[in-house]
Length: 479
Image (cartoon, rainbow, N blue to C red; front, side, top):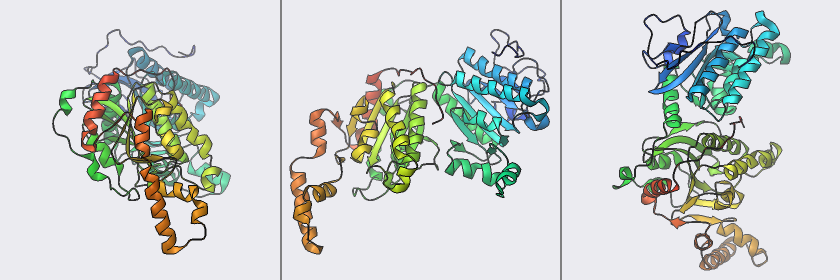
């Protein structure tokens, strides 16, 4: 706690019950908390922010909120202290903390003292990073320090009214000459699809409270594997996957068939060639990373590498086992990808998987080629279990591409039907030497081949066998 902070007394053993006369709290708190669960943290003062103990979706949490009724929710030094102390209480109680933002940023009235307070908020968020789940809900303008405060947390939820930016439209216009309104500059479309700042975009503050409650429940109450729940007949996730590896499909349907209930997908519109989601398998919370052929054919690229890497670190920080579904033709080639740093940004995913300490299960669904085979939680990166569907195709590249390189002299000068016939003959000879899947089984790169319909049961059994998840001692840096 900062030496300049105002002490808030929280009675020992304080319970999550509503007091008879509740002091005036920021309205956002009551909009998201379970009815009757708010308990203020200390005396409520008109300083622009307040904290409270509460229940959210049945999970004990600490909430804090800026108060837009006081100077537009700008952050005074005392208001900053209230937010810092709320985070500290969450750490002391080992419960999630959820911030509600509707703020113009640092207070002009308080000058650099306000900026110092904002810095203390940032420090508190980083201090809590990886120790307790931190969620942010933005419902209205969040400028400067308020926007950065939200972006430092684990999951960011935007309502339709959210407008998050470093500087607002007026300043942008004065400095750059660009004319833009607040929604285009920092609304859900900008941050949900393009920037990737938002993990979830919802309509209302009440909707935000509902999904935040679901998230804190998944992270704080992970549950245990109950194999009895997967003992009976299972649906076949393979029904969604075309046999032709060139045909696209939405991996979301496969994921939902493997989970107890539909997945809670994060960043569904940003870097959609990789799906990241939370759900449960046989009662146990898992994080899912899956290539999605519906977008870019499932290729990995710069944005999807960063997106998946941060999700892997989030799961690793909170002891959430990882289920990785692989259907990837490789990395997206091109000058633009190299220019924007696919090597540097893609390396983050390699680092995240290789460093992860939680149980990790990989399922090779349809194809996995080249460096992307390695990057998607391969045995070489430390996967605990690697399963494959019978039709999975593995290798440095696909058979036809391999033949064109290995037999380029024999194919040189041929065209049309003659070229196609020789290529088909050489591909057949190449495959007759033995499938890469057989070689992977023999060398231990793949543990077992499972039928698609048996995948859910196999994943549950391996989760059970791998035992409790280990939590890594790391902060969840916003990659």
